Image 1 (cartoon, rainbow, N blue to C red):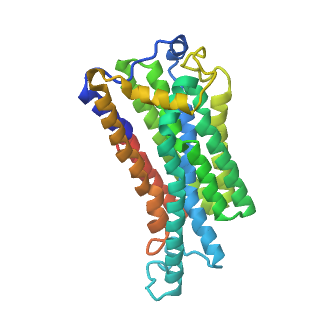
Image 2: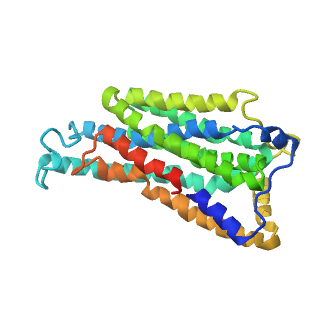
Image 3: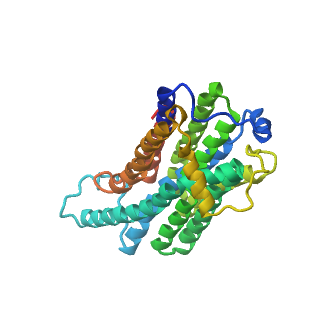
Length: 342
């Protein structure tokens, strides 16, 4: 959604695009390739999408186990969940679990997304200085650490506070946003003004398909084999993303390595960030402010009403009591809608 708005707004405000194709030798070498960052975006997004489905259900299960309570799912054979009333002990317990889930989800969302918001401008500066491929390691490594911590949490039944910390680490690395923005910058480097919109649309579709395609399998794996097997799926998808990034010659760098990167400190990063708005030809500064504002309200605030929060609080509790499979089907319908112009 953010990409569509930013692209359309940029075209509307001026005939001259803010982003020009890179003319460096590095970008020229990568430009001849039809497939570049799309597989990386697909595998990474699939891993993130699997976590989005798994995490709220795992939190609910742990909260129920702390109360020695067995969750009622899929309305049972006799519509047990639907028939609950306010005085039913099961209803009271599941409402308590839903309230605790809301608290945990709020904390996790805040500690995941706030670092993304405040560190995003500096990530862009690092991407210009160090290169697109190099800075893609930041979100990939951070999410890998998250996956390892998630595996330990599920295996060893570590406290949910460790899950909060794992999400904070993921947020420090930029979560899916830095990976996505890094891929968009990569495509902008190697595409022309005429081909850019199509290539960005293909990239965005690959991301949404990666998220959507994993939802139903995750639902069935959770229901049939439990959370440990599902976490191994998350790890496997993330390993595929890592391998695609680290294997030499698969993904080429688009920024020349001979740039001044000997000393990159806070002062240099802030200076480069200010330079972004220094040039004001053809109302460039005005356009940037509008685009950043629109992007913030469409992508960052949108996360507070994401599908994860929605079914985590409402769908899993009464009167719905969705099973893992139903959550998976809901997820694929909700998240795949983004590939069709959300």
